[in-house]
Image (cartoon, rainbow over all chains, first blue to last red; front, top):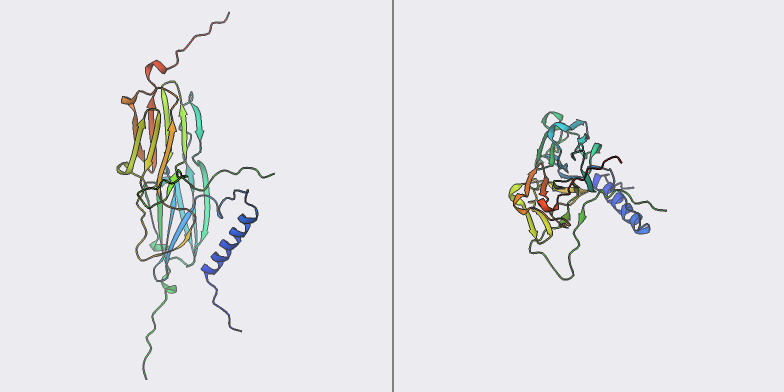
Length: 144
Length: 134
């Protein structure tokens, strides 16, 4: 029996299909997206590795901890202590605040020495190069 | 009984019937904290990806509209493979119930958070009335 190689995209597609089925059968439930806070976007390149972005407005770089082990990335930190002076009265309070902690499993093992992270205008970007040993190599075919 | 969960996902602006935007990107509603004291009102709006060159604050009559424009920064040579949030512009309007001293409005933006200070016009500031023990 011919077995398809298992890849990350298939699993993700399955998860998306299940999410959709679930939200269609329970339309009134407002589900938090899988994984929790903060929301992430991931770009990949099989030869280079992955780039992950997340939105953390108002959070200073020193308040965020990023750690990488193998193929797992953990982002944690704390955001936005109470800013209002004592006599003030809140009309609305919607912005996220407090501790956050999120662990993400990446599709590749990461070269932890070359990980880079930067924060710009409240957006955190983490560049996660793929471990050297895992990079796909081009194999030349000799004629003969 | 379904309880309401904290609204964590980005909410898109609902456009008016038949009205389109000139720009093609999506528009999101920025989350805000608003508080006030005797002197004025402070609005803090989360607009990640926006800096001072790309934000617009408009006060017309009693409606305050904040807009932030975001340029999408896709890493070159990479393929988008997993997304939990969309990237786009921000826009939100508020009706102000108080008289604002328009000349003294202050606004600043740092780390994607817009802070607007709207001082109340002197006539609108509440007069403190001392209560004596009888």
